[in-house]
Image (cartoon, rainbow, N blue to C red):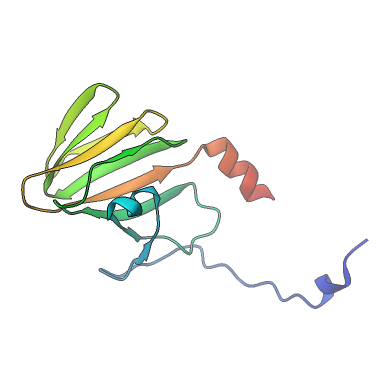
Length: 136
C-alpha cells in the first residue's frame, strides 16, 4: 500500500528556524502591493507557521488601502505616522505604538506627513485551521 516513489524519496531535514539578516527579507506580494506598499517577508521559508511577519513600508505618495481578511493582525510602528481606521474608529499610530486587532474587520491605512511609515506587521492565521493544515 506504499507508492514505489516513497522508497526513493530522500526526506529533507527542515531547519526549525528562519534567520533573516537586516535588510535581507524577501520582498513579496500581499494585498497592499497594488497600492505601492512594500512587504519584506521575515520568515517566508518557515513551513507550518501560524504567523506571517513582515516589515511593511508605506510611502506618503502611496494611496490609502482598505483591507479585510481572516485572522488577526499585530502592528508595531518603527517610524513615521499613520492613521489606521478600524470600522468607524481612527487611531493615530506613531513610532513605538502597537495595535492588535481582528483583521476580519474592515481596516484602512493613511500616511500622515511627508515621512514613510515603517512597521512590523504580523498576520495571524486561524490557529485551528493552521494546525489542521500542519497535520496533513
